[in-house]
Image (cartoon, rainbow, N blue to C red; front, side, top):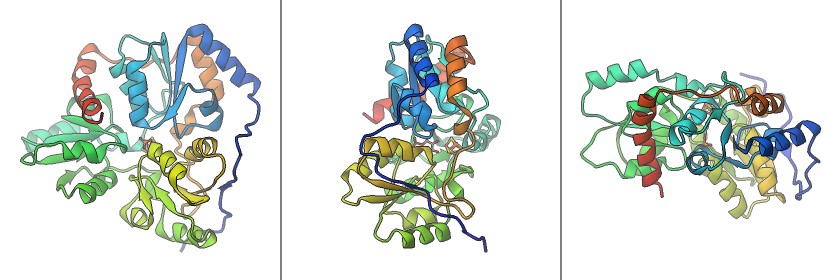
Length: 326
Ligand code: 13P
Ligand code: SF4
């Protein structure tokens, strides 16, 4: 039995008082103006990056932002599949990712060759791909979804089609429960979200009696079942604003607590714990740093490159998602 011998990570209300920007953050803002760049950041980025971004959000919001950006350069602070999606949606712009090594275990769990072989062996499947997958997997898919619109997307698929949902079995199982629609699930998962456990969550619930739990659908079913709300990171902000509770337990990657603290400044947020740690970082998301962001703006690298054929083929299922989720 693991020890669980740590103190909870608690973000007390900030009441809108933010620390002044550092010299490097000021430098990033100046370079951004000089380059006419837009900085798009996912909710899991470090707080220093979130503070200098033009937009901070979930995968769905970031996709809309990337598609409509008029900036000369898109600097994407997130992971590789997100920056690829931005490139597919706005291919004439350079898309910069501060650290090209920022991958995703979930995306890696569905190699395109394996999906192609599965489709060949099981013809006629309608493939719904969670956006956390490579451009090559998107090319093989019929429609993309995010955690923010997965239920809506699956509900749009004709009832006579058999669905294969890739790559996240946990999000897929949650969607099946919400929609009542049976789907074949690819056996992938997010290495970080599956670390949240019932015993760690029960312990923190005892420490903060009455505090509701909001969890990401990438968590395992037993953890989702303990949550008061299961939703995307963007919807967590909405939930926190609307909830009458003044203390909320947040079961997702720890960067989310920074976003919540800024947007809901009068509430207390408690990080969802694992068996070994009081909070949970995604090692890929955390590869981006303010130093790498500054250097990326200076050198306009590293850039995302995709072939015109890949962009054309991967664009169709992403555009279908954007149209269906309006
Ligand atoms: P959201 O779209 O809910 O922000 O999730 C992205 C992600 O990578 C979760 O692990
Ligand atoms: Fe991928 Fe999980 Fe990190 Fe999200 S938290 S980027 S799903 S590894």
